[in-house]
Length: 420
Ligand code: CTP
Figure: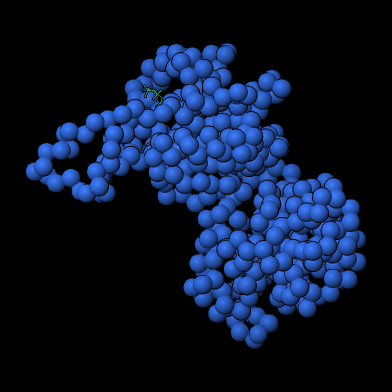
């Protein structure tokens, strides 16, 4: 019973591999989960809705225009209601055509609409002929889904229904089940999990807006001012926050990192864009928590030159610098005030850091400020951080950024608990 109390939406699109999903639906229930099956019209051509209805014990839906009974409040919006109670949506099999729809945000079926309107993780298990899988169009679409934080499971390799051999097989029911257990079951038994505090669900339902990475302030079309932040710490926190059950909006400066699963990401370049986007997102998501991990440039050129500044023109020295808005301070002044967490990337020693954090936290008027030594951690997968709050300064041992993210979110969950 590794998935007790979990509820999944299983989406079935057109593909002969749909027969394997019958076994998956059965196995999920053996593990204690409940399953709501949604089929596309093409899916019903391979295995009948009646089969899945009998296996799942629930009506199967495929028509976007009829409101499913008992699927939530009768607001005429089945595409939203059906996913409200679920922990995740798994599309298995996902056809090439359905993947293209997802990549383009199309809503040609109830299932596609449900995916577009979801707030929960989406997992996609492709199944198709090997040439369709290798086609650049499919690969482009798969890359787009990954970029959007959607998990791609498989495909596997082997004999195909069309008689060919290659990549494109739907993963076996046991493999799909294992993935769901790893992600939604009791804490993974992987050795490193023992060191990580169990954060699953500790921020359930919280809306978090956060920033990560550097900003880039253009001087002219070919130059600008930026810093060495890689975004890794912020992306690790975003990834962990999803596991903790939060809805995460990540506003990222220019970084080369994939979007963590389940995170809504907005890319920006400048501090001013980051400031505007943060303010809009805090309002539109009713954010309860703001985490400013970004290394925001303090200044920007007053104007961006329209043409490249030439070496002998001397005007690089004439640039006038203006101060950027302090995003964190602006959020901390909002009413109601989200729980604000700041990051200070400093130079010097840990003792220097310990000495300056309380005053900076005071100046920023925030409940929690995290300190680290910028030069030692920018671009690395590990870090050492200090937490500064009402109780003083605590140094955590050096660890991976993901492990530190787990500790930090545990701390934030405690703050949230005390603030309610
Ligand atoms: N920050 C921000 N907007 C800015 C500058 C900083 O939101 N324009 C946020 C950062 O995301 C971080 C925190 O403020 O969470 C601390 O950043 P830091 O650069 O250390 O703060 P400053 O006030 O600029 O202090 P310093 O004088 O040390 O640079």
